[in-house]
Amino acid sequence: MVSQIHVLSLLTTLLPFLLLLSKPCKILATENIIAKTCHLTQFPQDCVSNLESDPRSSGADLTGLSRIALELSTTKVNNNATELFNFLQNATDYPTWSFFQTCFLYYNTSVYQITPESIVAFDEKKYDKTYQILDATNKAIVDCKNLGHTVGNLRVNDINTMNYRFINDTMTILHQLF
Image (tube, rainbow, N blue to C red; front, side, top):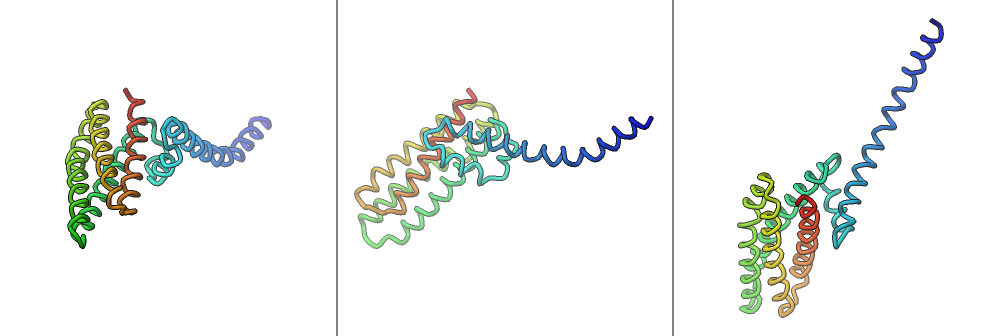
């Protein structure tokens, strides 16, 4: 009887410590799945940084990380289309206006596809269709980036590079699902 009380006392003393230790393990496991998933991408540091910026990534599995990356990509493309539109409105000469107009059209076409269609396709587990939409978006970004060399707007080049890299990583993560 004394030994049972001793064991029970020991368990109640150790239980809080075991619970405390289990939480870092879950965090470590989350960091490991992000690191492991992003290690397969072309730009792993960008991938890790982007996924860790979203609190939903903690505890997400591969499908969850894919969905989060897709949503982040969609948001970035939408925000950058708005930024390009603002550049377009503030252009001071025709060559600059023409450049921003063309890039905005590329982004706007991508936004139309990536926003509703990619999410719907993903939710329907049509990962190959989602991948194709992301690929078309990246092609539009490359087209805009290729135009950027003639104008030399550094902010637009940064936007294009950032979007291209993360969408490319999103495609790599997504490809693991099919």
